[in-house]
Length: 282
Image (cartoon, rainbow, N blue to C red; front, side):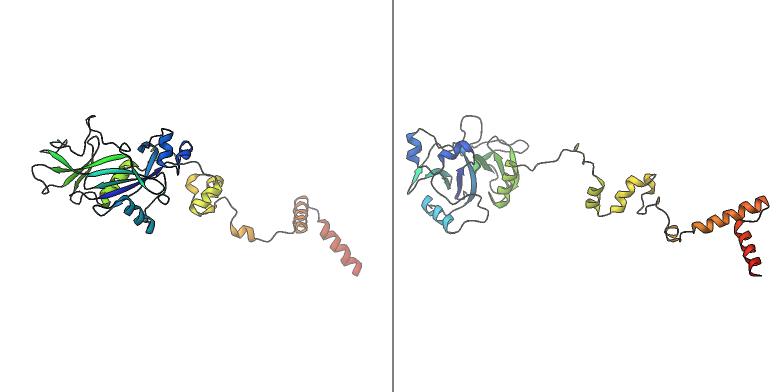
């Protein structure tokens, strides 16, 4: 059942680890600097042929880098972890060789967690007992494929983390791509916006950019009531009034004079001047 696989680990991008980058294993040992998984991050995990060596794995990656490979080319100071049919070995990448690092990653054995040899395990909510038939190393943590001891492959496998938490409740294909993605989602849960988070207040020009309707934004500040927001600027002067020609000031003055003369019984100045002009012609 066990699938041969490997993982590539590279130093985390932290200022305090820059001094370890591209250094040989001998240089680190001379300064008593341990090679431990806490300083590394997993940049790729994939399958390999049973019996492949770290040299062959590195050569395959160098020749054709996978599309989901997240790191730089394999080089000195990297670590290759090979899991060949259940046997896991970590190799430090030296300049021209590979050095076995037995303490790079340890599977817990006495803390109550699962190990590669766990059997007779009871899973909450499931009947019978279970045993570990395969495990995978991802980002410094171990995940286990559990098989039912009484019914074997007739029952779907269950994937647990080191502490026995169910991550995948039912799979018949072992650690396939779908299961690996679920483990990644567990390691890096998506961020969720707080329900109490309120949308910031927008200015009119921001509302225009958001809904493409400047008039609606302008109405919200100009109309008398919110129920007048209808796509029309109701407080604006009607188009007919805007197009009406302006009245003559002089005509208004003459009209006013006639009105005053009518009320007082006197002739308007304009009318008197017109009569004088007629007499002069005669």
